[in-house]
Image (tube, rainbow, N blue to C red; front, side, top):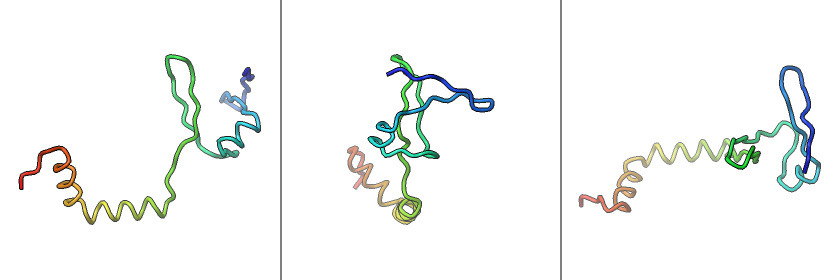
Length: 81
């Protein structure tokens, strides 16, 4: 698919057709990741966590940090018990 680069102020933008936006559940204002690859430019939706879930996860990790560390060591065969 060919797209034309547009000038927006001091930046350059590329537009995406409506079917792409619908397929990837994107809307104006959403963040996307742009990556330089050997094949060219890769644009993909940025996956973000719900803020409430992220806060709950941080709370669990903080509370159980020692237990999680011991579980990880056990999984790697580094269990000292």
